View 1 (tube, rainbow, N blue to C red):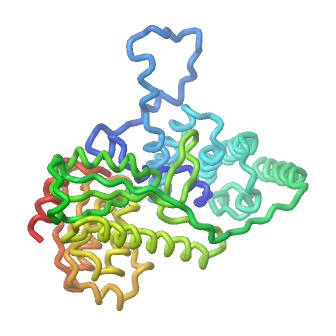
View 2: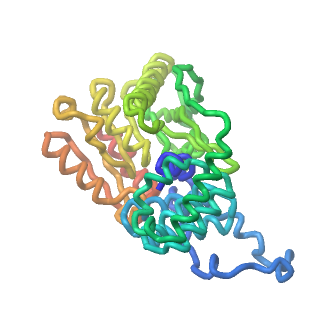
Length: 384
């Protein structure tokens, strides 16, 4: 499966804060939905609910599809890619990933046919296709090999002018939204909570949390992640950029995001009367909250990773040990399908072992920030 381009397509809001993540309904896929073709002449445009399908959040399908693939549940992954493609039959990465699912399942004919469809939709990464282990189970099939040879030839013919890629250090400007208490008094000091949105989301989407908080007595600042990618007709934002075969550049891109967040913190502390500073994030933002907060522990009075994961590859043992006085509030849904509940428990276990002051809040629910969790977080801030 093409992980870079999946990252470009899976919104892993996909790690965003849509109504589904803020405690609203989650979307389930009906198998009938993508096994039956719709005859346009049978559609009644005046029927009740005829346009309700337009409210479906396709980012949920893409997120669950990729998560299922990562977890080894290939049939479920195929189901969700099929559901997604029912809404957009021309999405090349989703079609390619569906072909990968069939390849893993050993369905040579379906893998070949969907590889052809992905090509027609615009998928052209022949180098990735040829080395993708997802097709190992079907690569010796004569018909699949013939299709692959044909596509290889067609792609080589279309590559008349060689294409190279250059990465530069151009600076960008990214907005940061700020909310203050309803009775805000500039002569008084307030806690500052810097919130990092999830992958695929944006500052405006994450600002919806303000309503979930109620009427908090803190300043809430939401910087927007710097790296953009396509979500079909929309633009998604990410805190990191994966650059294929360029581990050093990938690390540099991540480091620049971390430095950008710390600049936001410093600017806000200078422009507002702040008495305490907390770093909070959801999903991918929660993962960055762990790494940035621990690396810069002197700058924060506490960190609040929600629905996130602690990635130890970005934190060495010495850095982890040095921040062991940092208060941490971990929040996570027990039925989270996108970032497993186990990751939250593993982070709690590791940090407590190192001497961190960890408050662990779990709730019955999925990848979301429900009101009950928000209330517990606010109470925790007030107790610090």
